[in-house]
Length: 205
Ligand code: Z5A
Image (tube, rainbow, N blue to C red; front, side, top):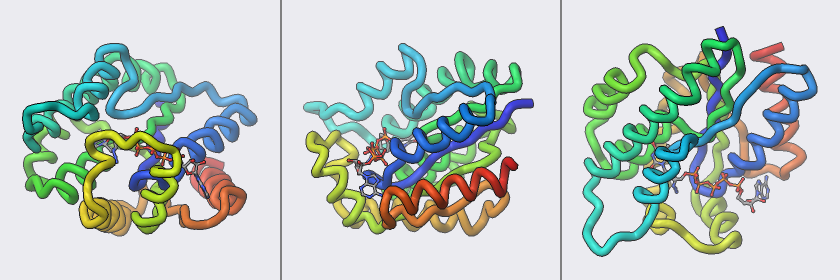
């Protein structure tokens, strides 16, 4: 029933661009799909997104950040993702729990067992069927993102933070080979698009 496809990567890797390629590919094949993003995807989850990405006068603790990510996820899963999958649709989600392992465990240093507990609580057995990991050196990704202007609270982290994020993504890609496809996002847009189309054809036919 349905197919759950997620898109991941460090800042500025080109997820937004990749999502358009995936949606066009699905459309051309007449697949029914929904698109969503995390944190976000429903009105309440989008409010949680705004809260967690905004700068605050007080310090946002790592645990608060983690719980806000999962609060938004719980809402998006219940309201949008699970109903769409149950209706046999493809769900294309810009980031999901792999981002939590990468950013909150890799980046912030939270023990991954704590994330696994929340993952089980919020998602049960739900995991992505396929994840496109847009892999790029963080310096190159940040340069692309900065050119676009206005960095949020997490985007202002150090380059070392994003190296740890990338490293966790790559570790997970090596561990969950049935789920992950690694795309070399340092290439030109045309080349990245070709890699994505090849991955979709190979995995989904
Ligand atoms: N976060 C978290 O910490 N924990 C979690 O559990 C979740 C998320 C779910 C918001 O995510 C933040 O939430 C994010 C992680 C955290 N914080 N950070 N950092 P987001 O996905 O909404 O935000 P983002 O990572 O900041 O997305 P982004 O900057 O929009 O990145 P992108 O979508 O990968 O980039 P893009 O807009 O497609 O491309 C960036 C620019 O590069 C743009 O001008 C493109 O035209 C250009 N581009 C794209 N591809 C290419 C190629 N191939 N060549 C040249 N130029 C290119």
